[in-house]
Figure 1: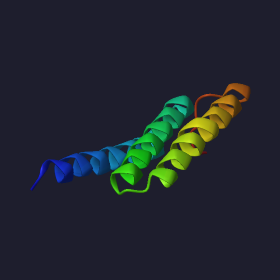
Figure 2: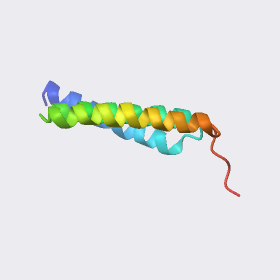
Figure 3: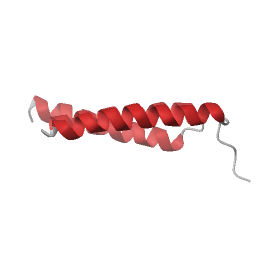
Length: 85
């Protein structure tokens, strides 16, 4: 097992952890930050798989624009998710 495989495994583990956090968090702002972290790790994974154009697009759109729009929407509404009735 070489260093590249270990780094790739750690990045994939980070993607899984951040996506599970994104689903389970009740604080919508924290969930948006977890989604941005997942997107950044995913763009790093694309770069490691020798797809730099996809990595740049994922970083710009996924972590940049989408996160900004979601945080703006959270600022205009309630921050916490309500309990199910």
